[in-house]
Amino acid sequence: MRTVAPERAVWPSGTRPSLDGDVAVGGVGLAALAGRFGTPVHVVDEADVRLRCRAFRGAFRHGEVAYAGKAFLCRAMASWVEEEKLSLDVCSAGELAVARASRFPAERILMHGNAKTPEDLGAALSYGGGRIRIVVDAFQEIARLGALADRALRPRMLVRVTPGVDGGTHKSISTGTDDQQFGFSLASGAAAEAVRRALAQRRLDLRGLHCHIGSQITDPAAFEEAARRMVGLLAAIREEHGVTLPQLDLGGGFGVPYEGGERALDPAELASRLNRAVADACALHRLPVPRITIEPGRSIVARAGVTVYRVVSVKHGLAGSLTVAVNGGMSDNPRPSLYGARYTVRMIGRRAPGGERRATVVGRHCEAGDVLVREASLPADLRPGDLLAVPCTGAYHHSMASNYNLVRRPPVVAVRDGRARLLVRRETEEDLLRRDLG
Ligand SMILES: Cc1ncc(COP(=O)(O)O)c(C=O)c1O
Image 1 (cartoon, rainbow, N blue to C red):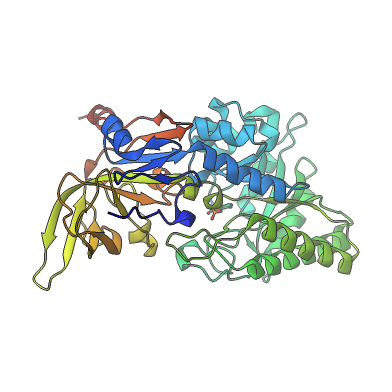
Image 2: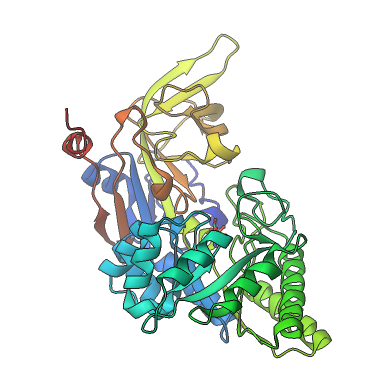
């Protein structure tokens, strides 16, 4: 039996296949890990996360790299990011609570959200003496922050701009075009008006502009175009108000491969193209180069994650199709049903003596759309009890998990140097019933 090397690009960097058919991540065999922690289980390779943090930090040496916590956040993840000298994006009081619990420095936190509630704003302003930067997304928010400010508390803020750039991604994760719910439109003049209102309030400390054109974007040209338009607005602000804003946050959205052969954005190439685009545009407008912030989420943590499931049933269809059902699904990975996201999968834990055949891997939920992997190649003798591992599940999986069908959410286990550590435990039925008051 030949040992098929996992496709490097979609697995954590330290992944090693073994002769017995298993795969080790971070030096830990996934089959043994599944035996110890149960299935489904989300595995995250700490070394891989740190490697990607360092790649971005190294590439954007003079700027700020803020990890977007919405991709995956728990206290350990916040600590790794902090230790690697990244900043942190949060988008709710809940995410901020995790940052607070891991004592993340306030001056390195940004808060996002198109509909921040009073609770979110209150949490942001009360953490670290108002040193968190709040990225404002609506006129009402500027007014609210103005009302909350006083002599002792001068909220730091950025204005989120919609630069009218289409990153060519799925419409559910495209956020840079006009007429969707995020930011102030550049084209309509709303962005300029937001800046006007922010500057008019002395008690608000406007630090810069922000944009985020979408997620899973693989064309650097889209980011360059957004950067040029944003510098144009910085120049217009200086022209109108005589104010040079020092910070330009260009968001995240850097694409990663989910299947072999797909493109990933290389941090070094991205940094050189973005820095050049900003520097050239600034030179054109005779503007000092602002400090650049970027906000990678997926590109830091997606490839560090692997989810292991156990096969529950195998069905042979009339037309020769094979449907493999596992003990998880859209409650731990909603991306296929939300965006038609595609994944690879492989069996682990034993050798498969026969050939492979095409199969569809489905989840356990009461929806025909609960399909995890289409057109999978799996051993012809696959049977209930076998283990399946789906790579590239570190971002927007645990963080988007639900309790649909009152299925308990899986644990998150970190692996590093041959050791496994439980970061987030599996939900219990007690957890599920705790909020149900009868
Ligand atoms: C404002 C903002 N910044 C950063 C990100 C991170 O995007 P990604 O995980 O694709 O890098 C998001 C994701 O939606 C976002 O909304």
